[in-house]
Length: 104
Image (cartoon, rainbow, N blue to C red; front, side):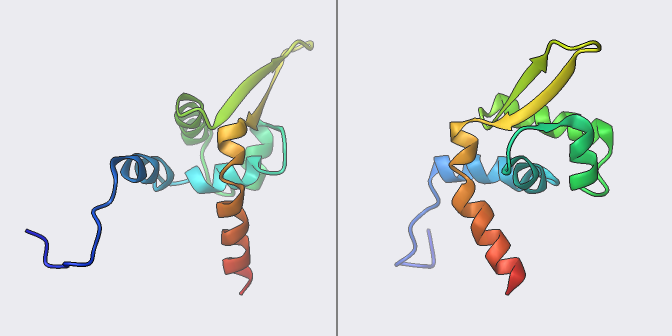
């Protein structure tokens, strides 16, 4: 039984979103991708301290969640860019709120 009579339980949808977003590096990767398409090595410069293996793992997580899309660029050699999907861009207010909070 809950001790707080006025508290509402956290919904399943919020728990699922929080489970993804609270993983280490995820918010930073989303913030880095917020400005537009970005290549894998550019993430390394934007997200200081993340290893290539962890970055690859986080990008896969975000891709599976439908927040990031991976685009292969037919070049020689082929390149890969990542960009936020419409669902990922919907996190824009969160990104901006984080920026305002950090600047305060």
